[in-house]
View: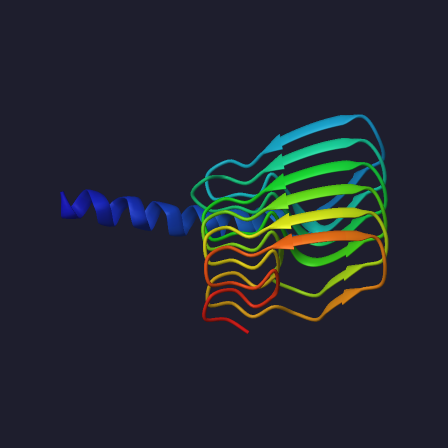
Length: 173
Protein backbone atom coordinates (compact mmCIF):
# COMPACT_ATOMS: atom_id res chain seq x y z
CA UNK A 1 0.00 0.00 0.00
CA UNK A 2 2.88 2.38 0.77
CA UNK A 3 4.27 1.91 -2.75
CA UNK A 4 0.93 2.84 -4.32
CA UNK A 5 0.72 6.03 -2.21
CA UNK A 6 4.26 6.99 -3.28
CA UNK A 7 3.46 6.25 -6.92
CA UNK A 8 0.36 8.48 -6.76
CA UNK A 9 2.40 11.28 -5.18
CA UNK A 10 5.07 11.05 -7.90
CA UNK A 11 2.35 11.03 -10.57
CA UNK A 12 0.87 14.26 -9.11
CA UNK A 13 4.27 15.99 -8.99
CA UNK A 14 5.09 14.98 -12.58
CA UNK A 15 1.63 16.12 -13.73
CA UNK A 16 2.14 19.55 -12.12
CA UNK A 17 5.54 19.98 -13.77
CA UNK A 18 4.15 18.97 -17.18
CA UNK A 19 1.12 21.25 -16.73
CA UNK A 20 3.33 24.24 -15.89
CA UNK A 21 5.52 23.53 -18.92
CA UNK A 22 2.48 23.28 -21.21
CA UNK A 23 1.27 26.73 -20.12
CA UNK A 24 4.48 28.47 -21.20
CA UNK A 25 4.57 30.39 -24.46
CA UNK A 26 0.79 30.45 -24.59
CA UNK A 27 -1.46 33.50 -24.93
CA UNK A 28 -5.18 33.17 -24.23
CA UNK A 29 -7.59 35.90 -25.34
CA UNK A 30 -11.34 35.71 -24.69
CA UNK A 31 -13.42 38.53 -26.21
CA UNK A 32 -16.93 37.12 -25.88
CA UNK A 33 -19.16 34.08 -25.88
CA UNK A 34 -19.56 31.47 -23.18
CA UNK A 35 -16.44 29.57 -22.13
CA UNK A 36 -16.31 26.60 -19.74
CA UNK A 37 -12.78 25.31 -19.04
CA UNK A 38 -11.73 22.54 -16.64
CA UNK A 39 -8.06 21.66 -16.15
CA UNK A 40 -6.76 18.14 -16.55
CA UNK A 41 -4.55 16.44 -13.94
CA UNK A 42 -2.66 19.17 -12.05
CA UNK A 43 -3.63 21.86 -14.54
CA UNK A 44 -5.41 25.19 -14.60
CA UNK A 45 -8.81 25.63 -16.17
CA UNK A 46 -7.30 28.48 -18.23
CA UNK A 47 -3.53 28.99 -18.13
CA UNK A 48 -0.91 30.80 -20.14
CA UNK A 49 1.82 33.39 -20.04
CA UNK A 50 -0.81 36.04 -20.79
CA UNK A 51 -4.56 35.60 -20.25
CA UNK A 52 -6.87 38.44 -21.33
CA UNK A 53 -10.63 38.38 -20.82
CA UNK A 54 -12.46 41.39 -22.24
CA UNK A 55 -16.05 40.12 -22.42
CA UNK A 56 -18.24 37.04 -22.24
CA UNK A 57 -19.12 34.52 -19.58
CA UNK A 58 -16.18 32.45 -18.36
CA UNK A 59 -16.22 29.53 -15.93
CA UNK A 60 -12.75 28.13 -15.18
CA UNK A 61 -12.06 25.27 -12.77
CA UNK A 62 -8.60 23.99 -11.87
CA UNK A 63 -7.98 20.29 -11.38
CA UNK A 64 -8.95 19.17 -7.88
CA UNK A 65 -5.43 17.77 -7.34
CA UNK A 66 -3.83 21.14 -7.99
CA UNK A 67 -4.55 23.71 -10.62
CA UNK A 68 -5.72 27.32 -10.54
CA UNK A 69 -9.00 28.30 -12.11
CA UNK A 70 -7.14 30.92 -14.17
CA UNK A 71 -3.34 31.24 -14.08
CA UNK A 72 -0.74 33.54 -15.62
CA UNK A 73 -0.44 37.26 -16.26
CA UNK A 74 -4.23 37.77 -16.06
CA UNK A 75 -6.10 40.89 -17.23
CA UNK A 76 -9.88 41.08 -16.88
CA UNK A 77 -11.62 44.15 -18.31
CA UNK A 78 -15.24 43.04 -18.64
CA UNK A 79 -17.50 40.00 -18.57
CA UNK A 80 -18.73 37.59 -15.93
CA UNK A 81 -15.96 35.39 -14.61
CA UNK A 82 -16.16 32.50 -12.13
CA UNK A 83 -12.85 30.83 -11.23
CA UNK A 84 -12.26 27.98 -8.77
CA UNK A 85 -8.83 26.67 -7.79
CA UNK A 86 -7.92 23.11 -6.92
CA UNK A 87 -5.78 21.87 -4.02
CA UNK A 88 -3.30 24.56 -2.90
CA UNK A 89 -4.16 26.85 -5.80
CA UNK A 90 -5.92 30.17 -6.15
CA UNK A 91 -9.10 30.77 -8.07
CA UNK A 92 -7.13 33.34 -10.10
CA UNK A 93 -3.36 33.29 -9.61
CA UNK A 94 -0.35 35.10 -10.93
CA UNK A 95 -0.14 38.79 -11.72
CA UNK A 96 -3.80 39.83 -11.78
CA UNK A 97 -5.29 43.08 -13.10
CA UNK A 98 -9.05 43.58 -12.86
CA UNK A 99 -10.31 46.69 -14.71
CA UNK A 100 -14.00 45.78 -14.82
CA UNK A 101 -16.57 43.04 -15.02
CA UNK A 102 -18.06 40.78 -12.39
CA UNK A 103 -15.48 38.40 -10.94
CA UNK A 104 -16.05 35.57 -8.46
CA UNK A 105 -12.97 33.62 -7.40
CA UNK A 106 -12.65 30.83 -4.84
CA UNK A 107 -9.39 29.22 -3.78
CA UNK A 108 -8.96 25.51 -3.34
CA UNK A 109 -7.81 24.06 -0.02
CA UNK A 110 -4.96 26.36 1.18
CA UNK A 111 -5.31 28.62 -1.88
CA UNK A 112 -6.20 32.30 -2.09
CA UNK A 113 -9.31 33.43 -3.91
CA UNK A 114 -7.20 35.86 -5.98
CA UNK A 115 -3.45 36.08 -5.53
CA UNK A 116 -0.02 34.48 -5.40
CA UNK A 117 1.35 37.57 -7.18
CA UNK A 118 0.67 41.27 -7.58
CA UNK A 119 -3.04 42.15 -7.69
CA UNK A 120 -4.50 45.44 -8.98
CA UNK A 121 -8.23 46.14 -8.92
CA UNK A 122 -9.42 49.44 -10.38
CA UNK A 123 -13.07 48.76 -11.18
CA UNK A 124 -15.68 46.03 -11.34
CA UNK A 125 -17.39 43.84 -8.79
CA UNK A 126 -14.98 41.36 -7.20
CA UNK A 127 -15.86 38.63 -4.73
CA UNK A 128 -12.87 36.59 -3.56
CA UNK A 129 -13.03 33.73 -1.05
CA UNK A 130 -9.93 31.96 0.20
CA UNK A 131 -9.89 28.22 0.70
CA UNK A 132 -9.13 26.86 4.16
CA UNK A 133 -6.04 28.82 5.31
CA UNK A 134 -5.96 31.01 2.15
CA UNK A 135 -6.57 34.76 1.98
CA UNK A 136 -9.50 36.11 -0.01
CA UNK A 137 -7.05 38.33 -1.92
CA UNK A 138 -3.35 37.73 -1.30
CA UNK A 139 -1.41 34.64 -0.34
CA UNK A 140 -2.31 31.02 0.17
CA UNK A 141 -1.32 28.93 3.19
CA UNK A 142 2.32 29.67 4.13
CA UNK A 143 2.52 31.89 1.05
CA UNK A 144 3.21 35.56 0.74
CA UNK A 145 1.03 37.91 -1.19
CA UNK A 146 2.48 40.25 -3.75
CA UNK A 147 1.62 43.93 -3.85
CA UNK A 148 -2.15 44.46 -3.59
CA UNK A 149 -3.62 47.71 -4.95
CA UNK A 150 -7.33 48.52 -4.90
CA UNK A 151 -8.19 51.77 -6.71
CA UNK A 152 -11.95 51.35 -7.12
CA UNK A 153 -14.82 49.00 -7.74
CA UNK A 154 -16.74 46.93 -5.20
CA UNK A 155 -14.55 44.36 -3.49
CA UNK A 156 -15.62 41.65 -1.02
CA UNK A 157 -12.77 39.48 0.25
CA UNK A 158 -13.20 36.66 2.76
CA UNK A 159 -10.23 34.73 4.14
CA UNK A 160 -10.28 31.08 5.09
CA UNK A 161 -9.44 29.86 8.60
CA UNK A 162 -6.56 31.87 10.14
CA UNK A 163 -6.12 33.93 6.94
CA UNK A 164 -6.72 37.58 6.07
CA UNK A 165 -9.54 38.78 3.88
CA UNK A 166 -6.88 40.86 2.10
CA UNK A 167 -3.21 40.05 2.78
CA UNK A 168 -1.43 36.91 3.88
CA UNK A 169 -2.70 33.37 4.18
CA UNK A 170 -2.23 31.27 7.32
CA UNK A 171 1.45 31.49 8.37
CA UNK A 172 2.09 33.74 5.38
CA UNK A 173 2.70 37.44 4.97
